[in-house]
Image 1 (cartoon, rainbow, N blue to C red):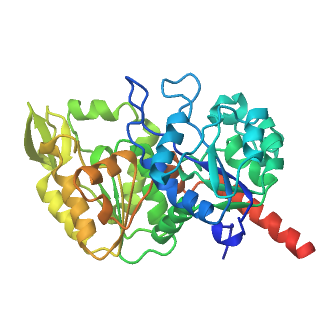
Image 2 (image 1 turned 135 degrees about the vertical axis):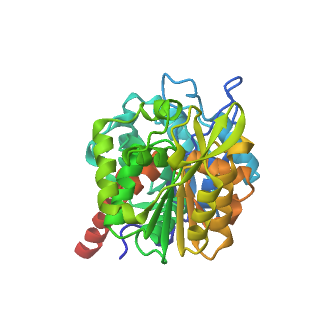
Image 3 (image 1 turned 120 degrees about the vertical axis):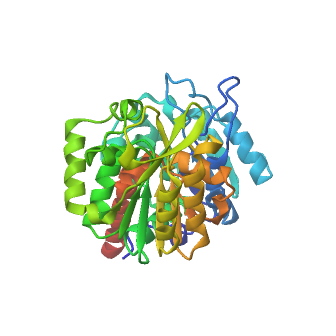
Length: 414
């Protein structure tokens, strides 16, 4: 059932569109230049489509936050957009004042501009309802100049910020192509996965992993959950394995009695569907040394799962119908501890599964191993992906749904 509008639902010709994107890029700390413009590249399809439909596209976005080192104007983002699009995209160093209004009113159809960093506005990051945000200076000044609002900021979809949810209360609104693709791909994993469905969870946020495992197994989304990285270490400890001081010190930063109890309960109730490594690789003075889990503890820190566990897990992944991966299996940045991460990714893309990866380190690993393009979908979200995985409502999506219902009700009345 349709829940929100997309770009297919409106006629954008000669219309002014407020387009909220997430182009919060990694910066070079030395000169504040863009280190990676992948987030800009990801929103190009939406921008190009709106321009082809002869819309006037007003881009609003953020970079960093006030007080942080990476907070800066969006002029270089506009320059990067210009290079990708092949024509100049003007940067307007104003958000909703007279300069911004003049620039918007003077736009010809099929053109685009970038407004000032939306986080220059103090109230932008306040968590309020869409109705409360709709009374802000930002919405009150810009909404009267626009015909539509388009959200393509999946990476920020978990935030209830002013520019992200305020406009949906007063303007016909739609999801951009990136947001639509993200939700469609994740829906294929969570709503109607091809069987067997395998989740591979690693990384460092094992508190969230415990909640995700509980959700996907309780709701029968996943058939198997493979744990690697710190998530695996945490569950091994919960099972009573003494990892050794070097490895447990890392866990202690996040491990609480509550987490320990939750992990034990999970193992007791769902342990038959959770695959844990039976060997690990430690850093023995700069060299990879593999140890069976039964032979732990070790004085050396665990840096990867072992080759036998990797081979076993790869068989499960290769035979899957759906694979979701978030979090590397080890410290893949070091060649000697990249084995399992690389093998698991190769197993995923060499089978017939619908494959989705997400999370900054996971995506970086895919790029490093030259496998990025071989995954069915690569999620751009960070915190937004975590929110989705945990089954929590996403304010931006909920706002789009509310806008859709409002327009639907309006049409029925008319």
